[in-house]
Image (cartoon, rainbow, N blue to C red; front, top):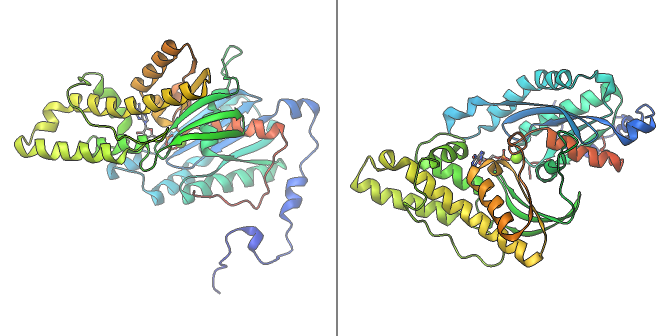
Length: 369
Ligand code: ADP
Ligand code: MG
């Protein structure tokens, strides 16, 4: 018998099953649960399997299993990523619930990353979230991964955790995205600028790959750059109009520069590694901050945040702090555990959706883009 060709359950032939009914069947919730729900969150969009528990906007646990298997290939191998998620998901969720010190029955909803990301990886998290929620008769909440990165600033680790006020500007910089966003509310934003080609994280990873520094290259470049001279070499940044970015030219000029130097001295990378890291880092981060500052100036917004994997970069963190001092802005730099992919950020996005009773249908498929 040929396999069914439908993908979205809504397009499936009618089997008599009612998907909507499952959503509606959840037990009645108390007033306190409506106001301060306990949410289990799951993130599996790329190569980190993560689960977190939040009570309201307070984080109770955040467990991340990073996949080492990709290092030997110099990048994420999608098939291996989904297999590793499959292995990790149960122990990671179990650890998150245990670390939170709660019982499964106390969970009011399951939030999960629906996309964007690797489809095979997303499917593991999405399927697990649905099954878990269905077993407990609780609703599910779909979360957009990028929105989660931005909303990570609202996670409270304690009563004193500062959160941004609207409107604020957020520079979202990850392995796949580079955008300057103007946030008007939790779910309303305007894109002020974005990359027209590679993402900043991608450019950093490619530079690291050219120097044979392994994957992901960002943390290695950050570490080696601390011992190098950022003015040793200069790589021009392209003049792109408005608040947009472009990183592919920087990568090419880095590649050609090294090709010429290596022709004269085959040991050039080895003997200049930290200077090369410091210089390329300064070029990319300097460009990021320059456009961010332009957007801040133009909008007159007084609060600025950074989010996404590249926001773990020490130069970006210090440069944004300095910009804040220079322009008397309030600056929000995420704690390291919320920079790269994590489920706590999915949980906080899920919490805001829970407050709006914005639940998803059990038939919902993941999306890659
Ligand atoms: P995505 O969600 O697009 O997969 P992440 O948000 O997980 O990406 O971020 C991963 C990216 O962050 C990678 O490109 C990685 O090199 C980069 N990164 C992580 N830590 C640092 C750092 N300290 N400095 C620069 N880049 C970093
Ligand atoms: Mg990410």
